[in-house]
Length: 336
Image (cartoon, rainbow, N blue to C red; front, side, top):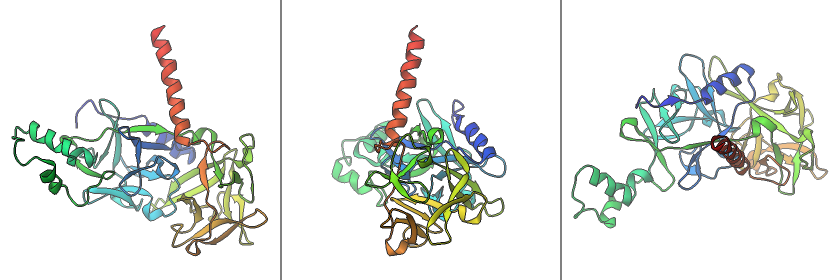
């Protein structure tokens, strides 16, 4: 690893968050060439609530995990190596506890196993252009055997436009942009398609001024098994967490209660105790607008979107607009 690389400030932020157990900085890992973000599937996709990550310290020296924000299934929540690829896996495995996010000459690199391996976008290695560049760099002739029809046959079957894989950092890496969301500063709302938001018990019109509609998320890890414990708490009352009610509905209660852990949001399904599709309980909306819980495998759920504003503003757009304003302010100071 080049000596110019260094651990980024996210490590300090993550350490502070681990002491408070709340307020993790959620961020997107973006390839700026097409503004696609890393997902739990080992692919690049939309930069939405499902593609947000937190960088969290683990027990022991120099152990870090990249955990997907509000992934419903703990066994798929943390990024880990699978062969030469990456995807979501168990947070308790050793493979999920050896990530480091380091700054390179321009942006950031995702490294694994003490910076031995780096995440690389497969198209940077296997596209026609990339293969031609590699041949020229190696001093090989490109007059024969380097036409598109020939080169495409060399591409592994596991490679697609949006896949990533792990390679030795000495051979290169993909530079990613990290865009921090604002959810740790202002919380977020859980909005249905008709602009009604879930407040923990009922659905009512979304409003930016209504503090009771704003949520925060927390994640801690079991000291013995390493299993994650995720919670949804009221952003301006962090002692009140979402949990199942005795009547089969959803309610708010103490965050130290057993039912307060295990919540996740994926594909619009707010669920607890499972993967949100084949198992677990999903939040639904009754005819009178109250929140209820039903079996996710019965396809009973209210589609909810994690949003910052009542108008459904995209959370990534808001984060990038904030970065733009900071850059403009710094430019004015530098020009003065």
